[in-house]
Length: 355
Ligand SMILES: C[S@@+](CC[C@H](N)C(=O)[O-])C[C@H]1O[C@@H](n2cnc3c(N)ncnc32)[C@H](O)[C@@H]1O
Image (cartoon, rainbow, N blue to C red; front, side, top):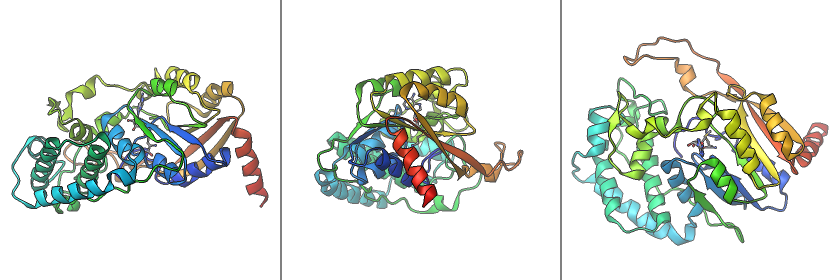
């Protein structure tokens, strides 16, 4: 899966454990801010029905691949198309939008890979694919491009000198897609979180909203363009899509986040809510507990977590010169469990402590 700020890669097992504690007989979970879909993927593996949601097109595409697609229905065709794409990338490829914008005007990919991405993406557009199959193929392309990019993991900037991986030949792999669990439905939605919450229902809602000013669209604008394939007007050194200026999330605003979170809690139709949040976020622990208290008892778990790699590298200016200090290397990730499942989690924690 792609490099992603705030990804719950290291916390996925704990989230699955929590859901199994809350719903020992299984059921379904709404993942309202699905990002890479790794949480939904792990829950689907564990037999939960999953309803993923994210307002960005690239994240919705990834959720179509890992959550909505039912592996037996698409795997054979996906494998054949991915083989064809790898063959296309081995032939002589021409400059296109990606090469010009992200390899020449900026330097996110080596031009040899830029041309291959252009050729593969142009070919995908000529195929008449079902939405799920198209999503699997596009996710494969995004993940392959991510493995040969020249960034520290965000697309706000690129490295001054090519990252060693940027010289590797891009190679697509078949994503690890899953069958739908028995008797459970799995869907991918692309809505504002509050709108998704008001139309989806399940046993559990999992919320992992952004917690500071960094916009996901701005940080992953190239994936958005690869999915939309709309050749947007771009601006600035990172050649960001022009719509990054207008498409904003209230969770990236210190002023708007509390109200947005409160409204979201009111819109959710599940007995239990599980919220991930960082101690470095715009909302404090007390504020979150207070907002959740209207849904019943609240239990809070915390865990120390390594921070994003950028903080180890320090802060660099656009010439690549170090101008800042290495930041804190660890932060605390909270889990807030509210509603019917909170008591079960509290009991399980007690038993764990006593064992
Ligand atoms: C912290 S990330 C989620 C990471 C995810 N749990 C994972 O492990 O990959 C937050 C996600 O929320 C999405 N997002 C931000 N604001 C949103 C909103 N108002 N409605 C829906 N999704 C939103 C972003 O696109 C981003 O993917």
